[in-house]
Amino acid sequence: MTQAAVRVEVAAAVSHPGGHVVYPVKVSALSAFGDIWELQKRYSELSALNDDLKKRFPHSPLPVFPRKHNVSKYLRHESEDEFLEERRAQLEKYLQTLVQLQFVQDDPQVRSFLEIDKHAVDPKAKAQSVIATCCESIRQMLAGDTRTPEVELASTSLSRNSAEASKEAAEMDKARQQRAAEREKLRQKYNLPSI
Image (cartoon, rainbow, N blue to C red; front, side, top):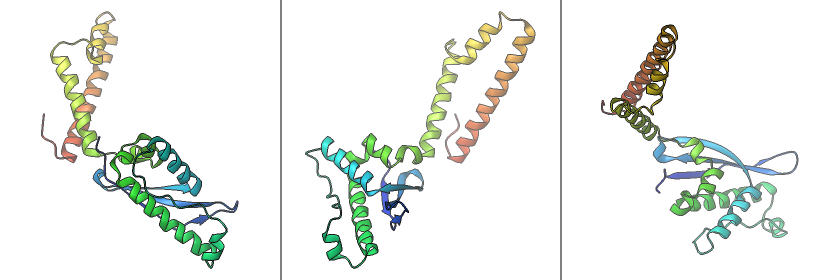
């Protein structure tokens, strides 16, 4: 299953009063017409994702995850800021390499972690799906299929008094007109052919 191409950037770490550090992660889905969103992730969350991927894909080529700091952090870096910048760059390289792997990009847990499905909605595909659903409903109605809500509502209305049936028919007509207007807007917006 091929998904939208994903890119990831990690911004400078943000230290919080409790002593923990958060990395702003900017995610963009390229084929979804430039959708971009930002997440806040701690090192421990990214580490947990890495551990989970290693367990679930033990024979797959996963990138090397940046090690947790230890005493050497104080020997190799002149300041905490220098250490955090190095880690930021390592996390960014890790995530960029990770999302280039198609099996990772297709993985539901990774997609959830990066909120890809929540934000990266391809409007053209969605419009085509809506139009296809509408076309199917119309086909069913024309074929006399009573499973469509409109046909079922109309048949139950026959047993009610005419005032209620007229009111329901007006509501159905209004809803049908609204759907037709929405379909037409989507068709024009995404330059889709007329049905």
